[in-house]
Length: 249
Image 1 (tube, rainbow, N blue to C red):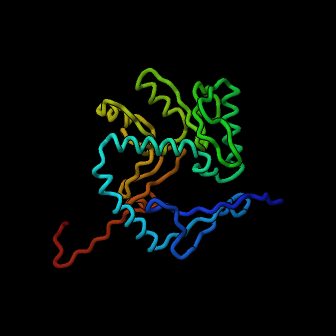
Image 2: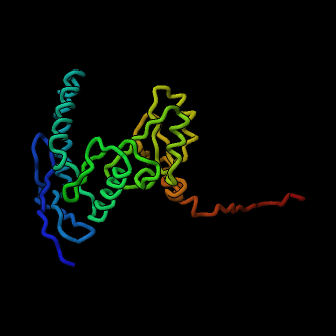
Image 3: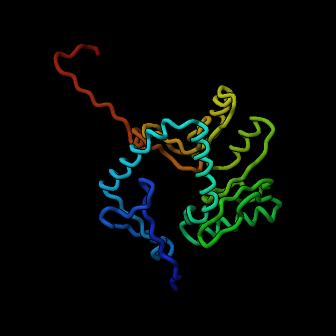
């Protein structure tokens, strides 16, 4: 297989208002799984680097704690604008070229069937731009299959019951979210969603180490957490009795 020449990028870590190399200048290499080519070198932080980051955060915290809500909002909006402006630098690449092609093919298929793209719908090498699609027909693959890319399909419904039906239309059910002004109504709907996890007024990634995380239907079997081996084990009761036996029991 012919190899493709790519620009290897070097990434440092940010602490104390500056970009830093690892204290011992060590790096770890990131290779593309598809080709094996070296993609990037990342600072391999050590205990000393972790300490530097913690110290920098502790030094910055008092000023942050004393800042007003307006000041914090201004800083967050400024950070948002920086991220938006540098999104092609910050956004991570899709892991393989085949994965990029899968995403692109499904987006183009949806557009050909009448869907509308409100942003994105293109890629630069292995970086696929965040994409929002509406009016996606139900027979489009991207409306029913897991695409594993920065693409969201927005489907407008009129009632909570229609929303549940739309969520349950796919064969997958790992995690879901219900965002609602009426929390009690959301909890009434939650058991109707065919998913292993239903988050109410929180994002789909909201794991707790002690919680039984896992999917239903085509999203797998079993659960993580303290009882993760239960589905692969048989419970056996072993007991012993000492002393004089009581009859008949």
